[in-house]
Image 1: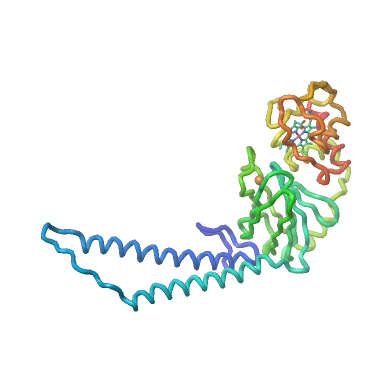
Image 2: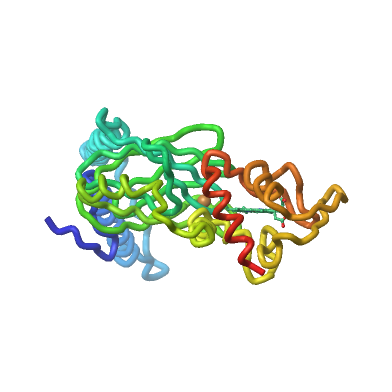
Length: 313
Ligand SMILES: [Cu+2]
């Protein structure tokens, strides 16, 4: 099977992709066909029956033609019925989630994707899945509307606050496939990217085992990774510049004024509180737009982020 990308479509990398494409091309070529017939017909008749001179007489047109009327009613109706029946069948396949699917929770927020695995750990921006296994994504948003899209898999679904949506796919090849957010969601919407990494079942099992054991990685190194994988960097700079949120450069240990007028010293407790209940204290001059990372970052992660923050003098 040819699975390379075409000028119209990316590589077909999931079990549903070829079906989605077949349906798409069916609708596409029928539309092209009728567009051509109508355009060419219009031009042909416009030229053929153009007014040539003063003495041209209007002829009386036909009153009706039952055969023609039947043809142009019945043929399009049949085509539309085929489109519906075919589309409905594919729709069902895409929406009825296989019972043996591996369920992974997806959290979208400004501006990142986090993936929660049944084993109790999570990853940021990287969805690792085994090949040839149905994967169910149970998705929700912490803030605004997002939309989860993997072009190579031909799956896309809105991600909403306060409500779960889901989709499923089965990857056919090992490799990396781009994830996009396709619902405009603010300043860094275009950076709300991710990758699906498809591994063999064996490599996947090994990968799962490796998660959660930090194997002696220094906390500030882990913190630096979390800072980008959990997209803190989309709102916080490390070079002193102001972004959506305050910079992290030289922040730890400094004194800061809150919107309430109170001044505080930035210590471990304040950073922890800022991560878990960001709206408890709002920094003066900023909007309360930081999502809570409760349920996404555990104690170890928060300690690592604090360690990293301390290195940014
Ligand atoms: Cu988004």
